[in-house]
Length: 303
Image (cartoon, rainbow, N blue to C red):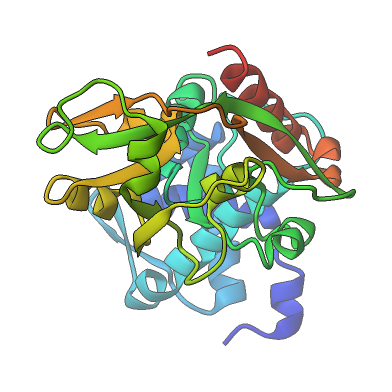
């Protein structure tokens, strides 16, 4: 069994040899991958065997097959090695074409279909190994998540968050109505019809004002909300069955529009809704995060 002293004195380059040989199971191919001689690979394996107290590989013809202990332990070692490489890429300059990291993006489920496919397409060629994990947006803890690095970016409606949280506008959208052709044949709706109609709202919170209510409050306007559901997919299914009105940003309506539905103009003017990108000020000192943030702002402000 390897001692603590042996492990702490282990040459990092030996792990690179272990990785190459485990992946190729051939001395020559491992040497070619590392740009060293097969003799150097053999010497490195000998040192690893001494430190780790296991044969690690057994020769079968031209193959070097991992031992049972090697098969059990080395995948975890290689996973840690990969994570270390990704972490070290955060320092100094980076090459977008070779960067291999996961970024976490907090985004509301309602607008995920609008932004996530676009973001993946945006970086697919310039940074093909960059990965994005979309996570639930929780406004109560968002500041803490950005400060701790648990979340790298967030996309949400405009909110008055203060330094060190920074934000900038991504897109602006007007409100509109989404209704069923089955129940609303006209291409216009009056203020009276809107006021007397039955409405659906979408929110993942059980109570409180929703996005459009904040805009309506400035007009002193109230409406009869019959259904409050958690996502727009459910709201659309309800629209297909009952004569409800769904008020939402036009950008979201375009993502959920079907042939049986149509978009109508609101019969009165309400303020537009802004969607912003949020990040921590420290992102600017991280080459990768700063590059991604600038790319997102430039892209969405030009489409």
